[in-house]
Image 1 (tube, helix red, strand yellow):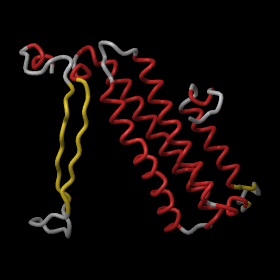
Image 2 (cartoon, rainbow, N blue to C red; image 1 turned 45 degrees about the horizontal axis):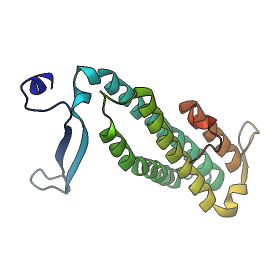
Image 3 (cartoon, rainbow, N blue to C red; image 1 turned 90 degrees about the vertical axis):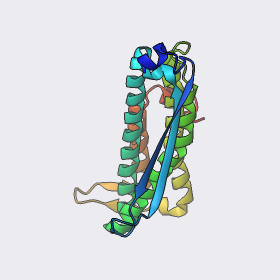
Length: 195
């Protein structure tokens, strides 16, 4: 990238768009395909230079935090499913997958917009990271809040586990909020916690 900038092929302040295309094979036969998958992401050319090295590391750290939120949502859904449906593994897997997919779908556009807005030569890295963390925290909280709201009276079910401990949806929710607070400690200190 440095060489492309030096040779004036790419200018420092340009926004690069990286496109990927792939095939998903459908019926297991080598000569047919099921679907064509395309994706793209745009970012400042400077993120790919020496100046952007610290930015790349911090962006990777934020992606890892999002993965931790998804894992927490997975634990939340497993525990809620256990209280509501018992040991039905089919419902547990579907339930978990839907919540995690909703989280990733919710943050996808916001992440792309945030990434494209970064200008390493001008922006303060701490402010930009806090900006993203606030977006991700709200998304992680909103997905679970909306789900609990949609559950109606089911949230009042209680199940006693083998250690004779009672498990309830409000207790599981509180545990999830503690995990979210551990991932994004600065965001949970705001007055309202959300939005």
